[in-house]
Amino acid sequence: MPANDELARRRHEKLVDRLEGLMRASLKPRYRGYHGQLILSSGDLEEMGELKDVRRAAREAGRRLGWHPKTHVVDARLFVYDDREVPREISELAARDAADAVDAAIRRGE
Picture 1 (cartoon, helix red, strand yellow):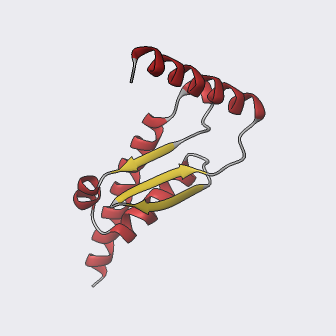
Picture 2 (cartoon, one colour; picture 1 turned 60 degrees about the horizontal axis):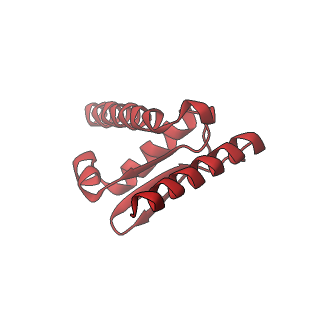
């Protein structure tokens, strides 16, 4: 039985490492580590394993990044996001970026 536990532990660590990499890639340097999020499709989840295991690994990966990770499942997708208090200057920068993106989409007629 201990061999199974060791295998499960290694599988979990590998999943945490993979999710941490995906989360890190989602970060925008100008937000200094804030506004992190990851959305996993049903296909991603199916490939990664059981939902409870993926959620647990995602929370651990988020903590490694200094996040206060929260997870939610909506329509077979897993949303992972950082729930930390965001400093005002980062929040204002993100709001300006969002407004610019909406403005650009409107100009393109989307």
